[in-house]
Length: 284
Image (cartoon, rainbow, N blue to C red; front, side):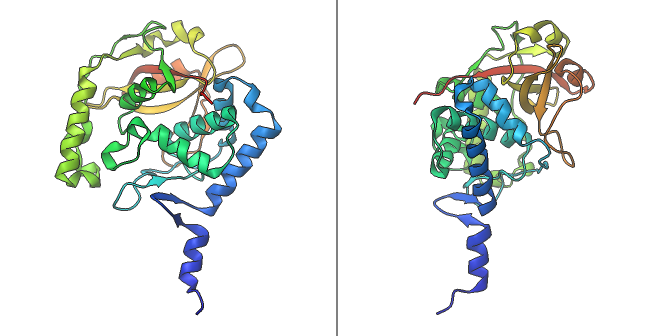
């Protein structure tokens, strides 16, 4: 019996196996990135340097909204063809960790992405994903992936109550499930028990000398109930100023900011400052 054409096309272009969704193009992009990293001997560089070099490979890649909201159940979504700001950052970090560990298989990538994206490194259901970036910072630091250096470099206490998801459940189709909504509320409650620090945007220029290339930069916001509005990667340019490597917005592409990070924030009224995390060298 011949295999139906629709089945062949599905297997070629959209693979969904064991709670994983990706395309053959994603596999090809991954292999090309790993091969280039090996040719350039990137594993001998610091983890921060590798994050930036990986991130720069994505310059010009189109922005996409809601890239992880695929299907009705929580699958590990792999998309190296388009990014939102969070998936750009997490893929740059994950791929850098693989390069540093000399792990080069697509299975290694799937495992590392799961480890990075989900609470305690385990994909369970929608609420196991680290939706709030402040929650991701806490979880990733607890598991030795990063160090939140916001306080260390002069940060002030970030006094803000987080409740955006539960108060805007209509924005999240999965929160029509009352069980998930209850669990998100519990997550928000836990976030609000913690003490976070941030650098107000007026202070960034004074502390940018303490920020390194490859540091992860999360931009805080005045939007009610929301912790972080945007994320990206610090990159030191000529003259020693810190710029922002990021996936900006709808209709735009991954780029390095034209202006230094401090100036970039000053042009946006709703952006209030930054949290800074430093990736740690992964253990073998």
